[in-house]
Image (cartoon, rainbow, N blue to C red; front, side):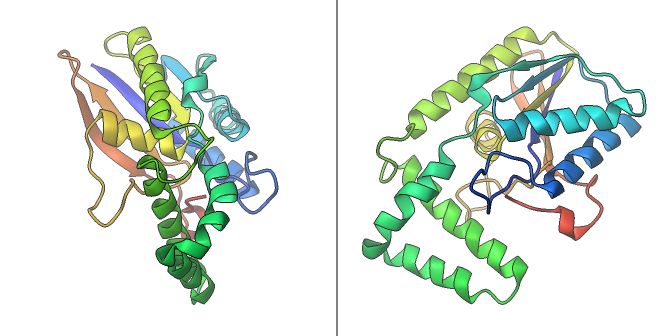
Length: 238
């Protein structure tokens, strides 16, 4: 059996001009994850990572934390196919033009503005994000961006490359982003999100575990595990 550890990057700088940069909290999340894996004597035979700065820096911070207690991991293979879907330009470039004609989108923005606290605001923001992603998946928004079909094709090609390189019994780390892990869990492994959500809800620096058996079938052992993040402030979705 081959075990695949799907790791989402730490919190990015969502409110900055450059989103593709780990927030200070993202570095803390990655350090805690790396230390937790080292404490559990988790070894990796292979490591794969996407090409984005927030993905690479998550791995570097994890590796540094694990290395400080003597845990060594192999050098990572960078796969372009593990880059995130075009969610950032989808929101920045395609949301505002749609606003005048989309009552549901208007209501979601109003919910964000009316949120009573940080948790309520985060929930409302994620609902808006899910709505825009659902529109993109159906091809209703995002003209000029990578299509959902093209995204799925390149993620699945990267995953096939990972599986082809991994021998039976190996432990494989895959550091990527929300959309990639969501598609691997749902579209490839067949895990279903709750009916009220269009996507899985995956926290920053969360771990999801897949196992490939002798027949080649994939089994989801768990998803969105965050026990290594001991405080509520560390559980983020950005």
